[in-house]
Image 1 (cartoon, rainbow, N blue to C red):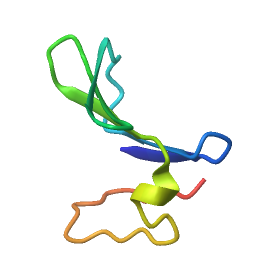
Image 2: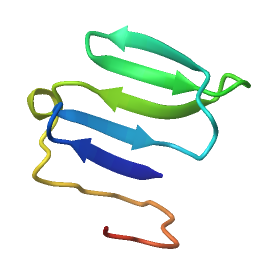
Image 3: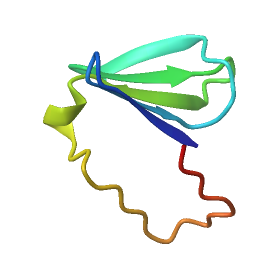
Length: 71
């Protein structure tokens, strides 16, 4: 899973896996879910991210992490 923030558009994208997204569905104003050809969730886009989430802190609980990469 990858999380990327685009400051020029204030968009947060959570890339769930490496599958190719073929369909997108806006589930709420500015919240878009991306799906692969099997209907599985591949990503989440959040527009106006600073208004929706506290981007100054990332906290994880009980994740079975194998690798933690900061880029």
